[in-house]
Every structure is written in C-alpha cells, then in structure tokens.
Image 1 (cartoon, helix red, strand yellow):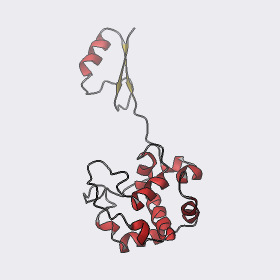
Image 2 (cartoon, helix red, strand yellow):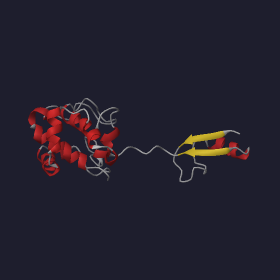
Image 3 (cartoon, helix red, strand yellow):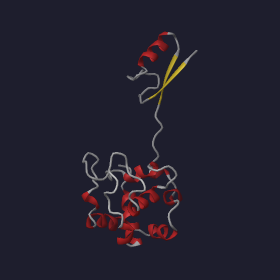
Image 4 (cartoon, helix red, strand yellow):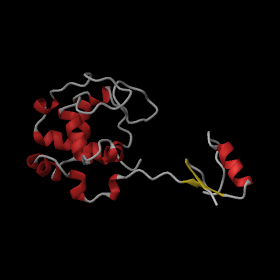
Length: 166
C-alpha cells in the first residue's frame, strides 16, 4: 500500500485538495491506496511561551527595565517618535515599514533562535540586523538606541509585545 502525503491545508485529512499533486492523489485513490493530506504546523504564539522564553537573550539591564515597563507609555512613544508614520496596526494598510498587527505573535518566530523581546529590541536599536522580506533596508533611523532611554525602549517593546493574539 502506498500512502501519499501532501503538505497543504484541508478541513478533513482524507479530503483531496486542489494542488499540483491532485492528479497523483486521484490516481492513488483509484488504485485503492490511502491518501492523507497533512495539516500545517500551527505557528507559535506569544501566549504559549514562558516569561523566561519571551525575554531570553536580552541584555540584563534591558530585561530588568522590561519587567517594569508600561505598554501605554510605549504606545505614546510610538506616536511621539513617529513610528506610526511607517508602521500600521491594520494589516491591510501598506506602509513603508511592516505592519504591527499581531507583532507580538509574529516576533515569536521571526528570527530563529531569538526571543520575541530580543527580536523587537534589536529591530529598534539595529533595524538593519533583520529586514522583513519585501521591505527596504536603511529606511528606519538607526539611532533609536541612542535617542530613547532604556526605560522608553522597554515601554516601546512592552507595547509591541502587547499587540498579540489579534
């Protein structure tokens, strides 16, 4: 017996899917073989992480500041510093920078081996360390690490982390 596995999304793993492998699936089914469609692996979410996993790898002084950070202050910093001029909260609005819609969850798996808080921190203080695909490099000012205090950076990261589960 041959089992055909196709990586795609289907509500029922025994259903056929419209894909480049559809002909193979039909032939396998007609030959009496079992056709199984694999379900995609769900993406990790911020809520699934421990507090330690959220902040892993951060500089100690920043991790301490983040523990006491105020997301509401971070939202105000994003407004005052002009972050919202390039980053939208609406995923359907194209802007110069990537959307912040659900960025807390997106940050979980954005860079392999980096915690979400470290990814967001690095994205602010060293914005060209990782540039989101389809967005240009060298657009975001690279001096926010100098312009913002540790507490302000922590508030901003706390705000971004709060944008999850959307």
